[in-house]
Length: 440
Image (tube, rainbow, N blue to C red; front, side, top):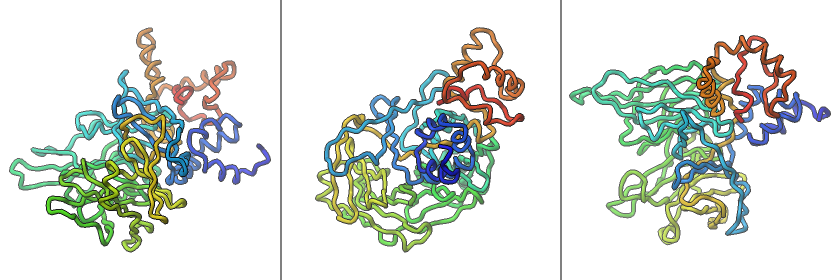
């Protein structure tokens, strides 16, 4: 292992998904230092933008989550059995908390907004490490009426900070004045800030913002609204020049935006009412060159005869290198080959019935070390409750430095878990996090 040059080793490791990297930390101290380095974590996150790892939620029990790598699909077999990996949901105060999918996400972190319920605490969660952070309660300006219009989570590469964005529609008592207040929460600063108001209206929107290229995106009827997280300024992106038109007077064509394979992906649904429930997917477009209107390319256009043989289709992955779009068709997957303009239905055994899903890269971002916030894991909460029952004081974050010397001495004699964080990972001034031994 030591014969491998460090630069080559980093290049190899950054192409590996998150779960194996957590195990590779035990190979040697050198590997651990590389994988834990914040600059490597950021490079790895950028590499995983085109990840095809799918997070799946069982819609019948609402408490089960699974992970599936779409690269394991055999494109030549219509029926196949693929092993899905169970993902443990996080718990707060003993209550299991499972986000609705699709949820706002960025670099493997999920914003659980409890289906946009304002009175419930929002949570940022890493499904791989099972760390989560509860956002502080947010208060809008004192207007007569307020409603949440949009939200999202993104990453500001300039400040190396995750930011949660919410846009609230505020109205005066006489409804003569409407303001779209934009508020941004910084995980690094652990606080909300009210920034420049959004100049756009989001009637009945409430769709999660799509993160790509350092910005959040929301699609309106004829434009894409962009909030650049670095400057916290709004701008617009062009829509496809020739979108599909409704074929019946009572129908309407509604756009839906995603980020798939590192590209903006626009789907058009033909439906008789808004929102998209019951609508049929008719076209799919991809923006090959970000921000360039002429780079919008139509990938597929489904005819009425084709749609008679399928349920409601939802694009879930775009693999440009293979010229493939993967769509969910109720309990099955539909693999669409762009070059041959052909589709193949694939049934996978082992998947839950009637599931919701979204692409979710495995993230190495550690909420506890990357940001100045107090993060509690499930194991840490159990220890805290045990201390209270035994009448022992709870160790607060600010007190952990005082225990660092003791912890270091104990670690000389105690056989820690194989995945425990080594003392080499810390400087003398760093806080020692008691949750680090078992959060995996």
